[in-house]
Amino acid sequence: MHRSDLDAWRAISNGERPPRWQDLFGHADGMDYLSDEGRNVAERAAVDLEEFFGARWLPRAMDTNRADGVPIPTLARFSPVLALVGPVGAYVELVRWWAAVALLQQEGADGFARWRKDARRDVRLERFLHTLTQARLGAAGAGIGATASLEPRSNRGAGDVLLEEGGVHVLIEVLTVLPDADFRQQTAGTDRSLAHLDQLAREHDLHWEGGIPGQIPRHEFSAWKENTLRAAEAVNSFGTPITLDLPKWGTLTAAPGPATQGATLSGPVTESDQGHRLLRKLHQKAHQTRAAQSAWIWVEDHGVFQPFTPFQQSPLAEKVESFADLVADLMNQHPHLSGIVLSNASRRVQPLPTDQTVETVVGSGFLRGIPIDRLRETIVIPRQPVRPDQFGVLSRLCSNEPAWLSAALDRLGIAGGVQALLHPQP
Picture 1 (cartoon, rainbow, N blue to C red):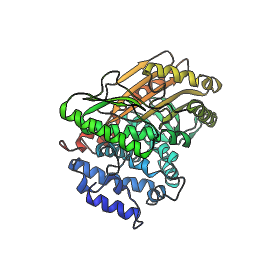
Picture 2 (cartoon, one colour; picture 1 turned 180 degrees about the vertical axis):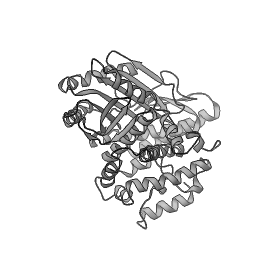
Picture 3 (tube, helix red, strand yellow; picture 1 turned 60 degrees about the horizontal axis):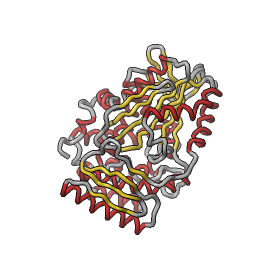
Picture 4 (tube, helix red, strand yellow; picture 1 turned 135 degrees about the vertical axis):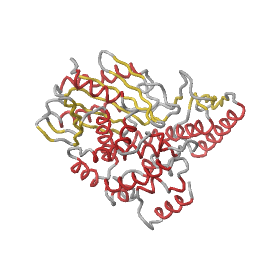
């Protein structure tokens, strides 16, 4: 962390001044990973995000005395100066937030003022993630030529985002889901282990395969981190795989280069009926939209389906089939639903994988790498028989996921896409 950023966050921590969006981006002197254009965008984005949310939103959201705010570790994952795993990915994610909001404002999206008012007055994490999902869907819709409206209220029904293209209307109700508190506590150890291995993989250009610990005592975790650090350094020095034999968690292998086909990490099984919990929330959303002629529910998953569940470890085609089975009764009970979408972009990977699209009888799946190091996986389950017009809009939206940010930057007057923001040799 640059000295200027260290001083800033020390002052914030001591209560000498409130945090600002510029603090999340960091001081310009510490942005050696950005081009001049990238620094300009950081400054512009910080000003615009503060204007959108209002000057009081971030201090309220990060107030540790509030039980309903956005947890500081959550925001830290998307701050170049606070993130544990490299600044570039966090910077691009902040830019993604800003570009979506700025584009919708520039395009004069219907409902923008009302949507902004709702975002400003609510600092809950769920509302924050909900707002970001609305922004991304609207901006991604613009990327395929659709017109986006926010929180529309019309004879077509109420929803969160309305995409209109060539006479086709797609009304979307957003459902943002996080694991419940007990589940988050159970998986916190696994998340820490994954973050540590991910950081080592990036620093030493290697990948891991084998078993990792979950929630364990601090001294055991420290010893495990030390062992894995030594293994990573040895692989980097000698260029050959090294296997650690860890009795409690099995073997863990570090090997040079990116992960090969079939290489997996496995953690302890965590018991939680997240599918049942998700269905309860889907039923609530279905009731909310029942006045609509036609509506889609877009589930933005922020960790309900954890990496080591059977669902997440299945091939994409099997996930499509499994999710279709999960929501089949719900779709039958609510004939106004045109379909349900499940999407997740919590995984960070490098290098980005090859795009993957699968089409089955019950729906489609899309795996897309998005700049710089995120993986978005989306499953679209339409009502049968399929409405090809609406399904086609959503399919193109999902297929175009890697490209919309660069297109949005271009429309905001920033040529060259994401790469133009980064220093060629950071």
